[in-house]
Length: 123
Image (cartoon, rainbow, N blue to C red):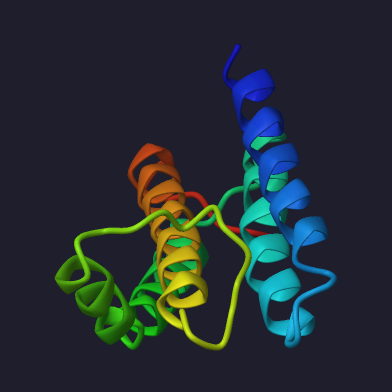
């Protein structure tokens, strides 16, 4: 059951990575989401390393907090819809989407880190 859940989560993050292929800066998003997918795939087969998933969670959290300004702008605007087309007049849309995507990745990695045995190592 756990293997199936981990593979499902890995598949979700592969889909997130694929959805970012048309982004202006796709490589960073594909790497971030792809790394989360890879760690879940490894965990599905007992190859998890909590040091790696924890370190990546911290790195993505730092990146996420650099987008806090866009989130604050969105809140101050009354939280308008972010499912509309991105326009130059609404730069908060991309910032909010990116912040929330990173939040999902960080939460997934924290969950994986917590669920991985303390002595587990890649290799």
